[in-house]
Amino acid sequence: MIKDWALLGIVLALLALATIAGRWLQKQTSLGLDDRSVDSFNSRVNAWWFFSIVLGIAFFQPTLTVLLFGLLSFWALREFITLTPTSLGDHRALFWVFFFFTPMQFFLVARDYYEFYSILIPVYAFLFIAARVAISGDSHRFLERVAKVQFGLLVCVYCLSFAPALLFLKCKNMDGDYANARLLFFFVTMVLVAELLQFIFGRLFGKHLIAEAIDSTRTWEGLLGGAGATAILGLSLYWATPFPYWWQAAAMSALIAVMASAGAMTLAAIKRDRGEVSSGTLIEGHAGVLNRIDAVCFAAPVFYHVTKYFFGVHG
Image (cartoon, rainbow, N blue to C red; front, side, top):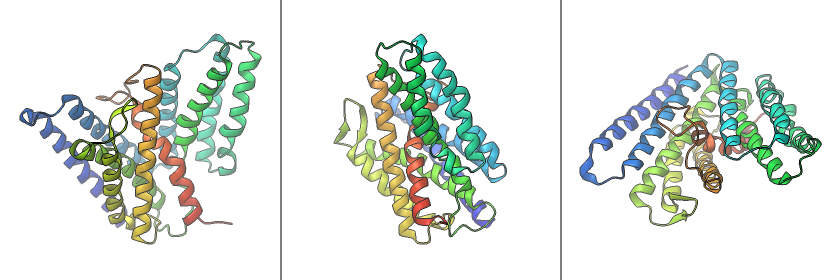
């Protein structure tokens, strides 16, 4: 229980410092900072507060946490689908995507049926969507339309579902009644911290853009500096994880940071392709839920399976 309160206290302290820093930057007009950059920083902090409240529920009601992630997933998928136009032939397939496969995925997660939820979407939904759209008889841009729905379901639903699935992952070094909640809290905190640190390092030291045509703010210096700083924070919190050694917690934190950046870059590429710069308005003060969970979506399945393989209970 001491570990739980300690982790919550550290996260709240970091949030408070980030909030104060963001408000201070808003008032420092003499520094010549880009107003959009400062607003983006504060939006990330606001999203962190939002997710921290959601994750706080995990310590007491894991099933409710899964439900909340399911609602976030539903909203994110809706935003994703609206990025590109759909045809009448897609609507029946989308009905099954939104009202069967999405809730079923999170239901199976809540029931801890890994054997089912690990293949429901990448196998059964993948095949069903293609067949259902084909039955509609509309072959115009068929491959593009099917791929869009499949990719959206895979990223916004399947990948995101592995975040609340951490609440049921059995690891060798789990201790305490809320060990799984700590693991989820640790994971999401590292994702959000990585995003903030990459933003800060990019603004302070960034010179070499990763892909200017995709994102004109993300730099190699920001990625490497943010991942390194995230690893340092992760090793300082290894006591809150099932990782027995500090270097393992550092390595996992760096992995989270890299995958988080990959997710943000990928979704940025999709939005650039569709001529969009933002989507949705679910989280006040920010562009939308899809913009905030892109990093979580890419990092969650990788973190889950690496943790399961190296530190999980097998057999």
